[in-house]
Length: 329
Image (cartoon, one colour):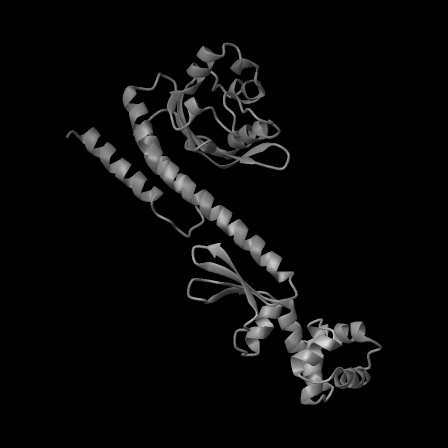
């Protein structure tokens, strides 16, 4: 193996190792591989970006160029904003199957397949031609997961790229796809986690996200209050599977009112039987149901209800339940 071949093997190994490594430095994996990939592929510049859908149209992110400053990249991104479905010669929403994960010489391919089309696009008129890129050879790949475009990745050459350069770019596609799929999954997980946390923070009843070991990852205000009380886990809990062992646990509303009713009963100095009646009222039960559950007469329950209303200073059952709900759990 000659020196060139050994260097190629070394660089490829480095690129694949970087794509397989998660780091916490905030730098994208693609940013870290730009220099070794540029050395592998040669050419004037290596360029990559990731299309992202906004509420209005398309934009790009994770944009990198090995040879020019940010001003050119900013102009490039500005040209892409507002394009509804086609950047220049492919659809970012769903590239045609023949273009997915295939290394092509893009400018030559589009001019051959659609003569005159590229020259009519705003991207050509506003970016490629003014910046002298319209006559370059462009070797690129649309890295896709199924029909979804994950990133545009390619290099520009004054001379036509060689078969070896095509082969080297193609050899990196599997590792690129795997890493970009992982980055997308992690991003969606982070967004989903933030959204879930925000959603449960707005719930009145205690809510928890727990991991596979039942360790609390997140709790809302009511949940934190319940944890601070050192109470055992309530039996009346609804559990939802979030995947990967994580679960969302919601303490049912009437279980929370049960605890609040007992707190109120202590504050109002109710007897044990009156407390039981108050808990039944908080659960929404009628007097007859409460009597049956407690094994007492309906008349006895009615008497207890009258006493409770007086002690609570409530005019009726609705106002009584409202006072219970206002108690700190």
